[in-house]
Length: 265
Image (cartoon, rainbow, N blue to C red; front, side, top):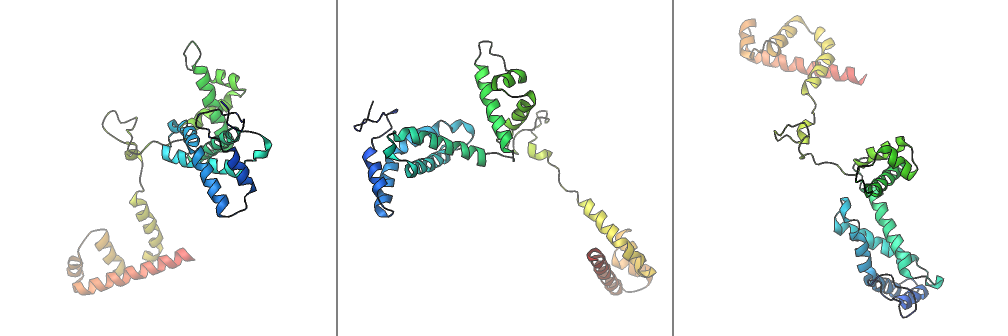
């Protein structure tokens, strides 16, 4: 099939916009050029969406893929030179596919993976797909994959390890070690033990405690280690509960100030 201008048309969704591209090339920056770009983009958008659909099984939403493909189409329109005599489709298709591949390469990895390892991952994935179509139907070995794509077995192992880095499991996914008890991956994530902070605080305040008068040391010991109430301490020491309260507040404030000063030194 050929367009009226005689340029080969590869797909039915490839419109004839040859004359529009020549007008676009002659147009100066401004509303007229923007209008031509918009008309050409709308004409070729079905092709861009068709290309985007070819990537929909890779974990990205189709709407997002269409937006990326539209961006690639816009770049192709702005860069295309109709005077070279080539069909726009032959230029636009690789440009759109390149934009989609860059999107997956740069934005769709769950963890940071070096570019070289990403490339190994892609080579290994393609080789496994091609070898899996062999008549024996067996899963290809690392040695077979290495021989197929000209890599070492170590490079194949690196590529294989990256296959699992492209998308992350949800924390709500069942844990493999759950034994069917309904545990999720999120249940296996540890949390900070508040006791560690308590140990650190105690170590920081130890030197300050040793400098307190004996009575203040005893009051704090009874309150925080023997878990006695202020009234019980007051009765044991023969003073008022209000006096014990003031002593505890004043002593704790002194300890805090000394500990902070020691940490800042």
